[in-house]
Image: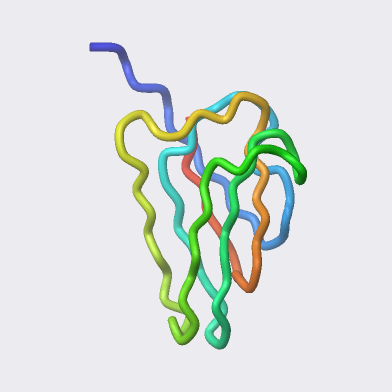
Length: 96
């Protein structure tokens, strides 16, 4: 069995690059706004890159965090991990 890579974490509150090289996303913690539905879109290759994962966040979540665990070895991002946030307060991404 291969050794697991070290897992790191980073948090963003706006759209932008989370990690600027090849990596695997292992999980997320999403803090939505309390009033509206929203979404977190993870793209590979910047703001116009390939969508690798979209997570919709329900309205009326009252700011409760959502934990997202990605199975297996996670999702590979060949170029970078770019976050596109819609009506989300913050996202912490676990990668490695």
